[in-house]
Image (cartoon, rainbow, N blue to C red; front, side, top):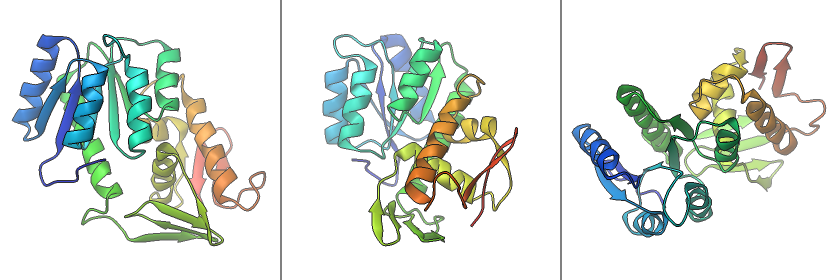
Amino acid sequence: MSGGGTVPRILVVEDNHDLAAGLRYNLEAEGYLVEVAADGKVALEAAKHSLPDLVILDLMLPGMDGFRVLEALRRADRHLSVLILSARAEESDMVRGFRLDADQYVTKPFRLLELLERVRSLLRRSRARNGGADAETVLRFGDVEADLSSRAVHRAGEAVTLTPKAWDLMLALVRRGGAVATRHELLREVWGHRGIVLTRTVDSHIAELRRKLESDAANPRHFLTVWKVGYRFHP
């Protein structure tokens, strides 16, 4: 679903006209192509036809709320980058957003420069996911082989399906070359969130990696726990 063109395309889904106009102005000033949708159904049609590289998604939308929009976007494209931008700051909302595989969650009011940096980060990651020039080709460890351009994963010759967040977490650990990463570091890098209340989100995705990529999830060889610190990858 992601377009992958030279100039990144961003879809802003926001029913506050003034905020949407401000976001559009600042994103276009950064050189992006921007489309705005004021409700969920229009947003899904726009995503289908304009093939954005990133969606900035409000949750409190008329008719179809942002969670339902996110579910529909994920059904259409598991790898489309989605940044939730919402006034809903409750932990339960953040957890729900991440469980639906939002890439980042930013609460309103927000700092513009920080939001723009998160947008740049997500677009860089999207480019690497889609086989950009600076991406490696194939990652191998144990009996696992992961094609970084197609995101196809095989273990012992059998196809394995990872959620987008589990994929990003795997790469974040592998690219550290064996260095330890704390849960908070991984939470910031993979989910773009600074809070300390969602560290169990990291644990649940580590469990997914072990379940799908380790020969014995109870005694992992590759995704190792560092007691009271975090995790590290061992090839």
